[in-house]
Length: 284
Image (cartoon, rainbow, N blue to C red; front, side, top):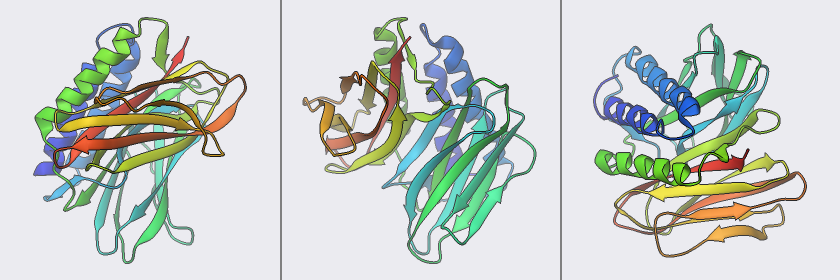
């Protein structure tokens, strides 16, 4: 893999390494090695010059998955575009599978190994579901991640991207040792998300939560003037929100019982395309 995609992916690996400071260090080491493995896997596949971060969708996803479980994400592919999906898992996973399906058609990498890769060219605009499956892991929640690139994809300001991740690290560490990245009760929910957005755009993801308390922590890069974070219940009612004029949102919510909620990361103000990342924390 050459050109911008490799540069972007390499910087992403470095940003996750930044999360290694503070009380969450052990988990952060798994995050860092996971993304670095995805970079190596993509590089070994040949030339993908011109690929960059996918827009209008989360381009970074990560979460803890127990063996035999999967994480899924639904997005829309644009007609005529080519996409590269690169998965990776931490050192305790021997076999991670990756698939992309529009229903009748499935493209997958179910071979042995923990760095699957799928390349797709969309003949028409279509909604697809991406699935990461921990086929053989430790028996405990293992960290698995996904990078999504597309040809003609958005080229983020890489220095600003690093600043956003470093800022998120500060926000997480500021919460102290009582909080950690969320390992859902079934070991199968995304806890780390990032995307490239213009002013007025937002990205969202629906997932299940157990009884709280939780904290959605976000951070935007230097081009992001105002990033908002919201948590909505199934009826669309706001459970928690941070809509203050800054790029460091924190939305705390404490559901008394299990529920399904939608996490929203909104780029309220920005100079051009800006990168924002968020993490779901849960009190230990």
